[in-house]
Length: 231
Image (cartoon, rainbow, N blue to C red; front, side, top):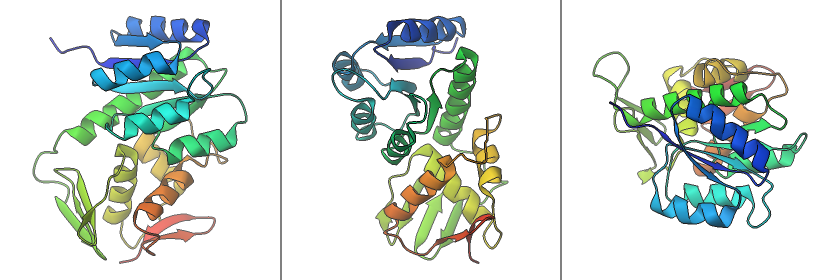
């Protein structure tokens, strides 16, 4: 029997943390719940989780700091919980390496759906694909992406990418010469997720990718359409 996936929940609003725990236990996940960041930190350093759900507003250390500390060591998915209209928090969270965010108040089942989607992607990211089908190594303008080992190099230096960043770059490289819309990228990565025209999730991940490649002009923005990598 497969081991239950370990989910970290950090939220100082006990009712919310407890509610998430109930829904996740119903799905047979192993839940590690904390009401403070400091307590969670000890667990982060001693347990390898499969996914973390972090509230941004915490009384001791912010969820953003917690996100950064996790990213220093681990690549598992992070979903941030944010209060309504905290757009800058969302952008900061994604820039620090979060994979997704959900705005309070939320429907517990929507959070569960997003957790499942992130875990599916993370498993796919950590499992080398079978030979055949997709190209194993993609190269372009100093970029070398090994799809099987999930390693990426730019000008012979390793690029440390989150699973989401890796997938966006892989799609753009595989569709070289074509414009891929934000909506298409969103649906191909998050599958059954909730896309809205105002969503800047993809934009932030693209910006982060560019920063990691020292703003080299590799990913072009086609205004009002999407993104492309020239042939």
